[in-house]
Image (cartoon, rainbow, N blue to C red; front, side, top):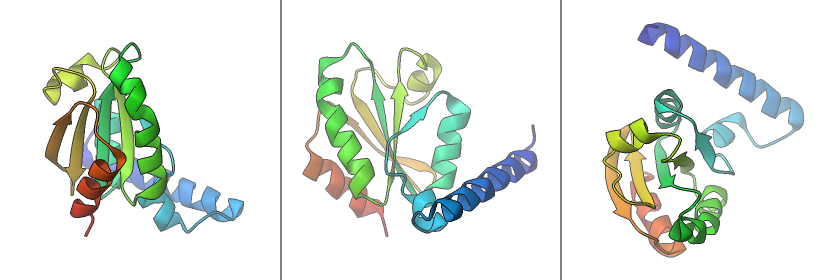
Length: 141
């Protein structure tokens, strides 16, 4: 599939979402598209690329269900999704080993921050809400 075809599909999906949001009386479509209120669960390379292309800043949480520190970080990740203008994505490293390898995830939790389509920061381990929020907001401009 060509880049042009992918862009057409993305545009079509975005228009469908905007239409649905307007009919639900929700926030403006631009706000909703740039800041999902819940983490986006990513199921593969294409979904991550779409999330990064659709949002200015994306914090990606690479996690595993069996990981204790990942479970400790989960409420923080949800709170960030609710309270920042960045999108927050979650990638299960067991289900998406290729994606984890692509971003050199060697331990979980690992977070990768994307700004303007580029990976700009990588953090390993549990971090506090304020630290993550400050990091995200430093790239929102």
